[in-house]
Image 1 (cartoon, helix red, strand yellow):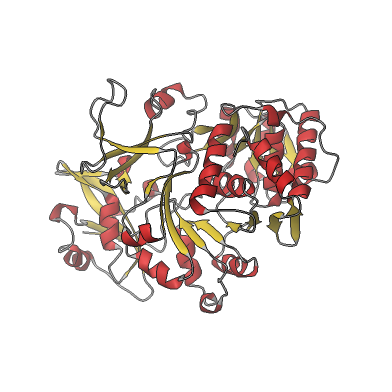
Image 2 (cartoon, one colour):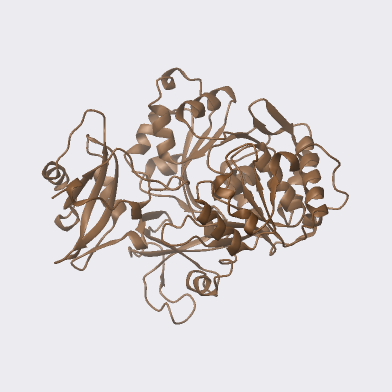
Length: 510
């Protein structure tokens, strides 16, 4: 791809594939030519309302074709799209709006806009339906003149470790990631993806919306997730590429209609956004024999995709998230020399060293908006990104993610990686889902707590779980607390929200 920005990337596809379907939602179907005309009209309306290149425009919208069209209009106007999480409280929305300095916030006036209640104190509200109405295309599109280093998105982190920070994603970042989508998965005209992931998430907007439109694919929008609606859409819309968290797939497989659903068009099932237990891989391969399975690891700070285990790679190494995608490097840092020379502490693949995983390449973003200190801590001067994930890399370059650095449990001086323990406990026949966290311990500093969702009709005690896991885990890794819950709390991106797993003492067995 030769395009240097998102606007030109999309318009290039519109020139090559004018009559192909670009987006579908319910009865609404827009070809590339029709979507290009709508997006250009939106850009014209934004420009007439005073939006200039570099201005920030917030989007607080549900998934849908209007979200995609307004997003493209913002890019064609040369503005920066601020993708606001629709599940935030009004106060959290206000924080994002003030932090980013938006010139306006686009909302769906036909839906509950309570979360935007604080917006008028910060910026005007504009209605997405009115913006996306048919109209004359703009005569001049400043966004097509932007360079790869110009900002395209401010995508705020989920805030699992503090207040959300705006990752500055450039046009060059998004173009490079779109190249990864096409190259790694072989996406082209005729491919259809179901956009279930929120559009304020890197998967939804960068890899599915921009990534598919860059190659002539079709994005089918599902405004809200439900297992039944997802299953019907996969079958009726003849989806070829699915991307989402494994919890979505498991819920869909539990739907009574799943055994009879015609999913023959489904060619690739891509999951990420959270740990994938190795035992799940053969189960999914049996349920979807016609599809390639892909385990993807990525970060908002690296635009979207950094590694991928696809097909045979995943079957042979179900513990791995794959190797770095073309153009990117992934390395392990052993924690030494962080304040010294550039690259100090990086170890070669195959060294069997566990440490923080670092990433370098064209999708590493430009830092955090208005956060110089946090940027300096996470984004190194030599281009390496500290991901905050702990793992190892084998001699063939395959990456194993063991834990979040902040989630690692230190028990009596021993490191306990929660994902390693979760992988074992998830194989217990009574366990449907499990998360492992640390809880305070007066003697050892931290103790291992397992929070589980049981399968229907099952019971489980802490001694039973410990006895079952004793042959599979070292003694210091065995859970010392057990909490049984009906569901695990999750972020809008589907990640387990471990900071919310604190439970009352009477809900814990020891």
